[in-house]
Amino acid sequence: MNNRFFCVYFLFIAITVTVNAQQIVTAERFLEQVSDKYAAFDDYEARIVIRSGNVDMYGTVVHKAPNLLRIDFTSPAGQVIVFNGNMLTVYLPEYRAILNQSVSSSGANMATRQGLSLMRRNFAAAYITGPAPVPIDDGSREKAIKLALRGVTARRVSAR
Image 1 (cartoon, helix red, strand yellow):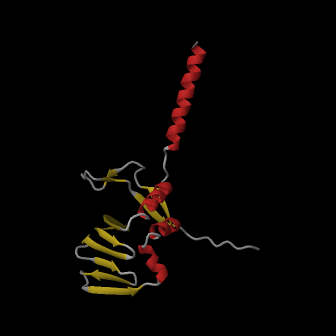
Image 2 (image 1 turned 90 degrees about the vertical axis):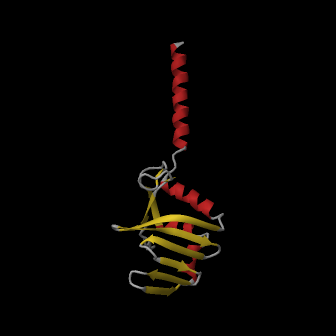
């Protein structure tokens, strides 16, 4: 009777561990799931944080299908980035400068449904604090899963 209880208990533990192991989602898989859902969106709006070194930039990004994109920054205040499918325009109020860059059709693909898929191929994703949602900012009630993206170095393979 004691052996039977032990076997049932062990089987329950094994099933629980197996089920829990199947629920672990890597950062790469999470980004893939987000990419799949994103592909179904026509338009979206989101708050963003862009970190470059020790500089944090905050703003709101608006995308309108098929390839219109606008980022209005709150920090640096008044900075704007606009993409119309052919031209990238950056307004830097600190310098009272407007920068324009014509974009090739391959560069324009980043503002399309395939853009996130391209990001997945060129960047490696990792959780910043783990797979659980955390407050977006200190003291915020809004939560998000935070990812860090690192550029992937392409490797050239040659046949000899």
